[in-house]
Amino acid sequence: MLLSKPLAIISDKVLLVEGQYEVYFFEELHKHLGLTSIQILNVEGKNNFANVLPIFLKHPDFKQVAAYAIIRDADDSRTTTFSSIKGLLQSHGQPCPRTWSDFASADSHKVGVFIMPGNAEVGMLESLCLQAVADHPIMFCVDDFMRCLREKLPANAVDDPKDRARAFYPKNVDKARVQAF
Image 1: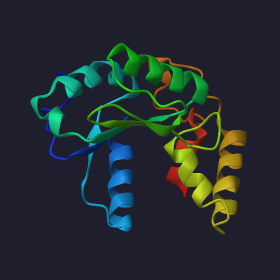
Image 2 (image 1 turned 45 degrees about the vertical axis):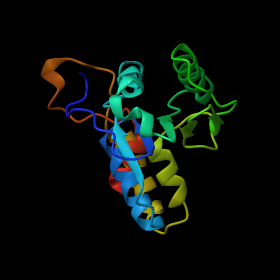
Image 3 (image 1 turned 60 degrees about the vertical axis):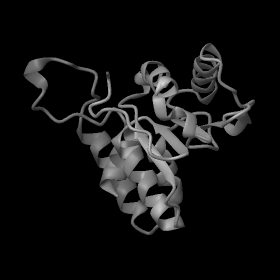
């Protein structure tokens, strides 16, 4: 199995998310909202949804699942990401929402899809977090820091083992900005 831990279904509501950061994010969000009955499963990478979904659907405890949702980053294209998820759901005979932020129902369960950051064609969880703190006074410092890095560091285009110790401008700016924040 691709999961580092055996798959266990312990709730009737499940979120399937890309990675550990999404698990942390949604656990904290659920705590903040007082939600306790939603299980969050890490599929360990966006490319693993195609491998994990069939395992999830065939799991002996799947029959207790009333609703599940797939949450993915848009990355370069919300449209392409949604098409990929839609194809995956259809290939496994699952109900498929019409849009990237909706649910569809079948006889015994609902299936949802949410593509982050939600209101943009491109982006990820970090983009959503940055939108939430866009007006925070420290964002000026973060932007200034990123500007300085862009001026002082070369682009991260070289993958030469000799250059691995050398600092490069981050490939993923939103992830770097969240870390700086």
